Amino acid sequence: MNELIKKQLTDAKLTMEKAIEYCDSELTKIRAGKAMPSMLDGIVVDYYGTPTPLSQIGTVNTPDARTLVVQPWEKNMLIPMEKAIRDANIGLNPQNDGILIRLNVPPLTEERRRDLVKKVKEEAERARIAIRNIRKDANEKIKRTKSEGVSDDEIKIGESEVQKLTDAFIVNVDKLTEIKEKDIMTV
Image (cartoon, rainbow, N blue to C red; front, side, top):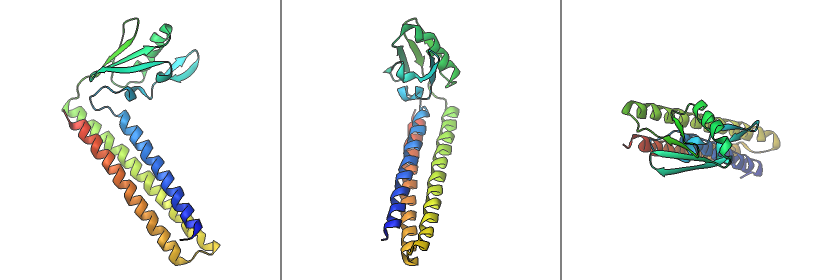
């Protein structure tokens, strides 16, 4: 196989892996009824005028399956942390006891579970679209190699390899989606 086509395949594979990683991180943020420190990953606190991720100014623990505990490293950050959690609108009500913040994760209703599964499917579809766009870009770049002396047969082989990559990565997205849906629907 031509070196230019191999480079395009490698680039496409790396970009598709990044799309899978992003999808996985987005799916992790969708809560499944269990308390997980990653639920607070997107929360940014005003730390002396600088927007800082919550995890960088305190520790987040899960003492049990339904509770998150946030303990700031500086006691005076309790109120800004509590405000940031409230403003993030993640459906959790912070309880400040002067030392740490407790977040009780309510059990999910059947309707809420279905809504979360819809969110999971939307996120999975975004990942599939991203992978298909990567395929399209890779195929266009492979077709452009014709001007550099690559034969039509090599171009066809390259395009079929890109399709194989695409199919494999879409299967990965489907597996991630299935695992998350099962996690959400398990009571």
